Image (cartoon, rainbow, N blue to C red; front, side, top):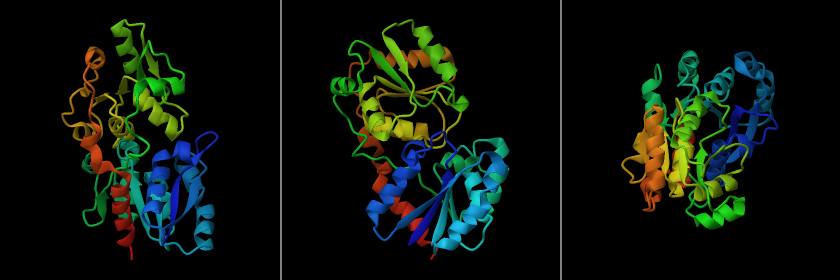
Length: 312
């Protein structure tokens, strides 16, 4: 079974493992699960609707070069491009950056109708979609690599990363300049705490191994996003037994449940600051890893393979 993965390759100095880490991880898990699965990749070079659609000829040429079982497109615009050809069936995964954006919901509806199978990474996305066909949709979150994202001694992780043992570190969920991640709220909350020992770290341009180390080295994983699908940042933090403070986005409330030492926050800056303060004041270790075993990457890979097999 040969699958063509279609996704954006627009990041500066694009690196699949770095810039499309969750897709990369899923493909690797599928290959580990089943060595009869073979994957090729089509990275879209062009931004916006016209940029994506301009890649149609190159995609058509790629599809003519091999016999493919299906095209697996990630996010709505990739799904739209993939569905402009009708020879090879398309599976589209909606990640949230499409369904969560009102202007793209119409595109998502069209992609839902054209795709042979669709995957939503959370039930919340299904609820937001204009229409999600019951007979062909699946809800499958991105999986977590529990071998990589695991608890490690904090001090040893800090030494490996060159971090101070005297500071308290908070890891922000993404780059500061991504608007939807809402960095100004995180910054304002830290200013409210008036504590010079606290430092906010930006999660930017790190490979997966370094991210896993960071989640073992920091004191808090902080997400203040306006919207998400099923954020890997939260799941990977919990896999490392790292305390999480997050706004109520995507499936975070469902994933975190009532894990002691982790908190859902509103968008009120005082509330965010207070939840961070509670985490930093807590001396009991957070034991969250056992709460999220359903996200093991091999379990998720089996579900995705099942979708591929439905196309036969």
